Length: 283
Length: 336
Image 1: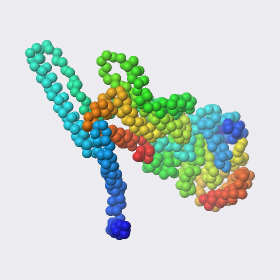
Image 2: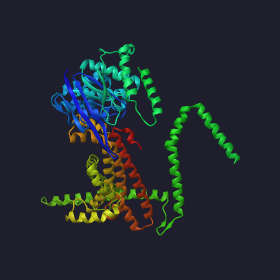
Image 3: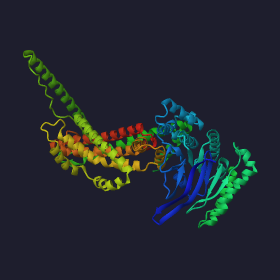
Image 4: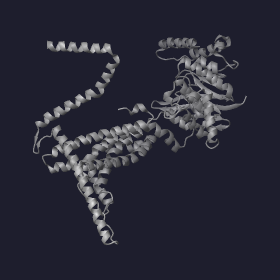
């Protein structure tokens, strides 16, 4: 396999008034060309920190990231990010938001007409061609996230980084977006790192699920290969025993091996079981 | 008391019938009441209280002017304005005729054209005040907005400049004016100035006072930009200048406008005081001159000026609000 991204020996320490806080320790991960990898873990375990280090938005205290033989020092369009809260510029239309990225990334390499085609192509890829001249406050949350994805795709990234892209959406919209994303993946076969806290989402979309231990000093606990053949269909998979097995593997990791231990553990136990039940229901 | 009670029940019955006949009419009626009738009642009550109070205040210049006296002075001021305009046209006509005559006698004669130097009327003074306040305000904006953006972007600069802003912000225009006057006389020492010194003094004083709210609001607006938007800008590698142009300024436009509205309000208040002392021929000077004049009409004329000052201040605020509605993407921030 052809490794495109190499995260090696990454640690992250933050200076706090109480002293040094180690968020991440010894994170090692290799990602192959065209692979879809999900990072899953409890909130506060440092998933976002890993993604931000890969994006170049944060600098690792130790270790580093190598993308196609080059060390990552700063953010750049070859590592396009889809943010959780869409992060569209509210004063620009969907088209203009994508345009800002396209004209910045392609500059003079594309003619005006080529850029226009490329922007429209990316917006139609996420099924937003009908509303491309609307402003973010005129479209729904799911649509905003679609535009966010179109903007990231339009940069033609080597690797697409998605930070809980569907976390702020309702369950139905989320399912819809997941299907859209699979469809796009079928076509483009991008390399993707996606952060999620949704077990079904992780199993459905990923080639590998990277499960992270709880912080402080969080690291990669287990890596689960998802060898379900593509294209995947959520309805067919719901009955599939391999799917349910993989799903329970992730659940076991999250709720048995890495159960969040807190002072009010009794409360927490009930709430985490109920959470697990909710995600089953959502499937 | 019992009589009133029956009256009230009658009213309630009426309202209920109205309610049943047409719900829509009622909402329309309510909206009308809210928008027109109640403010109208407020103004009427105020006018009544004013005239009652005015009758009971005796000053050395006679009774304090009530609404009627002020209305009369408005008329008088307008007639004075028209008289002056007539005199002015007459003056220019005479001058033209004279020059034409001399030119007919002697073709080599260079005609002299003198400007009319009559007294400024109330309307002229309003115009002067508006020009002064807008110049002062624009000068302040030209300095404050770039400074605010720089302060908002750099924490170090913010820490460095914050004490200065906090100390100068509450300073009254009256404290600045003597300093400004002396500095302007020292630096702007031409025998026949194109722009009068009194104008420059008032303008700079206005600028000094309305600089701060714009700096503060702009810097807060810039500093509170959603960090995700900044990250987007970093990911697509916008240059510093493009980042400011494409992200920072549009994102902070609502806050910049809030600062500008605050500043314009301050500028207008400061201007009147500055004009009084600097003798800039505007509304402030009008008030001061009338006060010095001390005729039986003076108080009514000052009161007329007060109403005009208030009204113009209100209009300036409305104009800014309208501009904000046109230029700002965030329509919710552009409400009253």
